[in-house]
Image 1 (cartoon, one colour):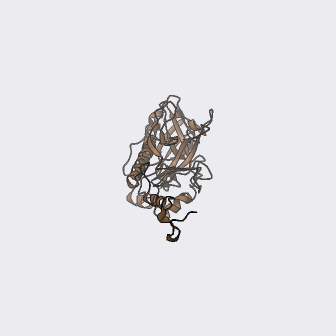
Image 2 (image 1 turned 60 degrees about the vertical axis):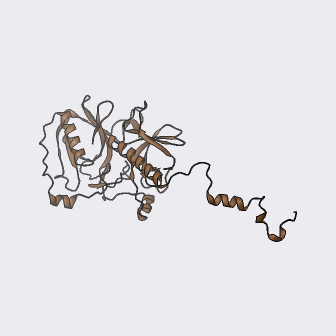
Length: 320
């Protein structure tokens, strides 16, 4: 769902067909600024880009002629709507039905366009069975090639899977899935660096071993694995950084600052990490400090130099 940032602008991620009729949808960050009368989109959240980065595209709200459900025009693309402006159609893919309706209503209200009311019978049962892809775990923040997928696709032309409709999954994730170890949650977030306090987009994987992050969703080896044993607390950020949807992963050695794509995603990550850590602690209680494993104490007694029972019988009582 689109949300309001701290400046009151409607914003969020959508998949946009930048080149009309190309069939290639790329992940972009939309900003609907009603006060400035502009609808513009960027490669990423402008907060994550260098200062002064220009938008990929900018549309004057006064030039928008119509906003409509475009699934009839693009029957193989779910949750597709279009904006008619400057004698061109801008086709966009939302994350789900509510996301699409939210954007259509927001753009409509900002540009004062009158559009028909929603028709609940827009998609027939037959169309649902032939076009929609079921998703058992809920829809993720990415839509590729007209198919709703669980794993987000990195925001780059080379990683876009719109042409063949296939979902990229990291090799390490596939190995765990083959062993029945499915990730609890996956997705792209923006993370602050440890030494240089810059912000980079990383692919996060939460499973029952820890929270890992990769440079992309195709990498085999993670940049870092945060063990569940080290995670102390996860909470939303309340500091002074001017960033939306920011949360903290507090560990024994470091606090990780992570930015999600939306408020819903932020709360979803916080809840998922918290539940996974709590489940891990119940199943694997941490041994108290100072206690010695039984096997170790036995070895100590066996190798004690003061124990004469460890010497062979024929050497007892002799001096060396």
